[in-house]
Structures are given as C-alpha cells and as structure tokens.
Amino acid sequence: MEVTQINFLGITVTEPFTWLTNWTVAAFSFYFGHMLFHAKSGDRQRSYWSVFFLFMGIASTTGGTAHGFIRYVGNNFHYAAWIFTGVAVFGAQMASLEIIKGSGLYRPLKWFIIVELVVMTAAVVFLQSFETVRVNSALGLIGMALPLQLYGFKVGGMNRNGIIALGIVSNAVPALIHAAKFSYNRWFNFNDLSHIVMIGCFYIIYLGAKKAPLAQAKVQVSASN
Image (cartoon, rainbow, N blue to C red; front, side, top):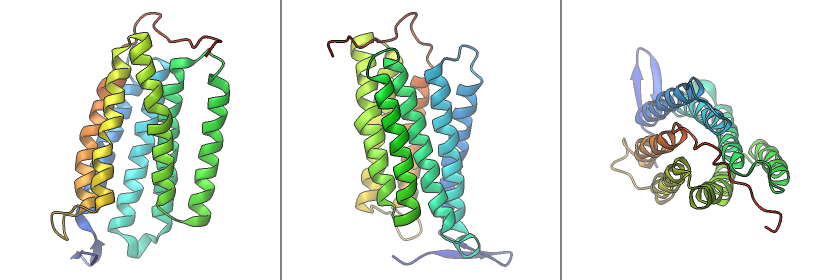
C-alpha cells in the first residue's frame, strides 16, 4: 500500500490520519486512566485498569509518532509502542486476576503473565514483528482477562465485570478491521478506522472499571477447582 504523506512547514508527515487517530486514542486513554486513578472509591481492579489505559496512551502516542514522523524517529518507535501495548495488556490481566485473589490459582497465573510479558518483550526486540502484539493481546485479553471477567460476572454477580467483558469482546471489531485491511481510501485506511472504533471499545471498558465494586463481592475459587 502506498504511504500517504503531506508537507507542513518543511516537515514531512507520513500517514497523517493514522498519526492523528493514534493520538486521539492516546488522549482518550489518558483521560480514562486519569479518571480511574483519581477515583475517590478506588480499588485494586480500578487501579490496574488505570495502568492499562496509561500504557495504552503511551503506546498510542509513540505509535502515532512513528506513523507520522517515521523519517525522523525510525522504526524503533514502532517497537517501543508494541512493548508498551504489552505492558497495557499486563495491566488488564492483573486487574482481572484481582477477581480471584486469595485463591490457589492467583499466584501461578500471576507468574504466568509476568513470564508472558518478558517473552513478548524479547520477541519484539528480536523478531520485530507485529504478530507478537497480536498473539500477546489475544492470549492476554481473550485467553485470560475475558474468562476471569465473565467468571466475576456470573459467579460473583459483579456487574462491573460484565461490562468490562463486553468491552473486551467489542475489541474484536477493530481487530477484524485491521486484519482484513478494510479501508475507506488510501488516506483513511484500516489503521484509522480501527483506531476510531477502538475508542468506543475502550469507553465500554472504562464504564465498567469505574463502577464501584459490590461489598464483599470478591470471588474466591474453591480448592476443589
């Protein structure tokens, strides 16, 4: 696909709409993270979701800079954005693990996601392939965070987890747009469309994360499980 570019005040901006939509995602992510971090009735789930949004904001800022100013910053900004995305997924996983904190599964799953983050980071550094981001996001969000959120909703009756689960599932839409390379035209392509849809998906997650937890509603997994 031909890379679009414009010249502004002597600066060459490549993929201008991808740069702008990435930074738009970053602005919303920073806002969501800020609101969750400074919530008066914060809890650990909410705190970890603020970490998710913080690093998604950093990843989107860095990624947008790479798309718009690749001639000046080089590909390393892309790789940094991918690693920051991995840290964001780690935050989502830690938030979801809070649902089963105190159970026998908590510690081994925590170590699993720490190792997963290390492996993903190493894969980005050595393979330099976006597929590492796809695999890590699918494993972290669909493979772990979503089942735990659904468990919290079904067993613990925690509505916040049901809303978060819906937000995670909805992220399949921008993922499909990106995978199918569905574009309006060469200026507003699949990257840009997926970014716009992603903002709505993140908003759903934010709506769930900001809800106050039910009193003593933390789910404990029995030893028999």
